[in-house]
Image (cartoon, rainbow, N blue to C red; front, side, top):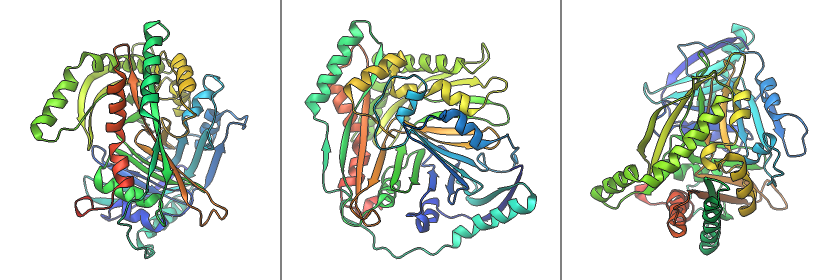
Length: 455
């Protein structure tokens, strides 16, 4: 797919461009809610790859084969000019270190290869239709087809103004606090330094509500830098993640990771809010927690980077989101000669910020204290034909599965989780409250009626 073509169109909000395809298998939107210049809409993939736990194929080799030989991109176009969208479940990490992890119904790896897309430029307020092909004519034809998506009719559906989910079941708070206390004991015994332990909220979408309705609520109430929607055949992923896992610049092989560790809720007044942000920045406990994951990421990246290229140019930056303040650090590296994004994923998966340190032992403890995670704490990514790559950590994410005797008319079961990084001086009650602060935006979108201020 060595040729690429572009066509420009006036600005359209990407979520509304997605709406006509909300029920279409493998329709995907990567939506910037601030901090990222580009959003993307993709549909009708050329090829789909699904690897469940029983599939003996090497998932990273399969991803590399799906991408094929590198093809150049046009520097005048968006960063992503066609390639693969991939969803790695947390348990894909069992293919890196054989830990005997249990599984959910979600595959270890789901990938789809797209030769056309719409890219939404939030800075210049324009839409770019992108087509790839072996010839300029084929690329231009695919770009024209993508441009026509903007004219697709929208099916009339009355807006859902009530709660999207009548009720949610949640992991008992006392049980979660007991799990945190157990992890603290194991840290004090020298088994690990940190582990990320989560609790789950489960329920069903009400009535005629579907995953796209949840995306609309989140987009209106608490947009996030790495929001995403991927409608699979009998599943859907709705993510409101604030966290980047890894980014690779295709032309240079430069790597960037931005792990999040350290959280405070937002304040009720500007003064209280500023005070909580300052408290987070000054917290020795949160800085130590963050630094452990920075060191873990540096170690992971060193496996695929030349000596001396792994650096941490920015530590402990406070970033503010709709419901929380987070402590974010940046780690950079250089992808070694002859290596690609599949090699990078193999070296770093799953994300260090949601496992712990040392990673393998932390994953063993997580498996003892939690049921299998599925998409939660996995990664959603795009991998370009030119070697470019960007990915999120799937926190603030809802996994939905359709069920019922007639799956075309069945309802949607859902699960969301929120966790906290446990270190030696963690307080179980404080960590439980942290999970509740992190899940608050999702719970509001799911369980509260739509109000005028949230539209």
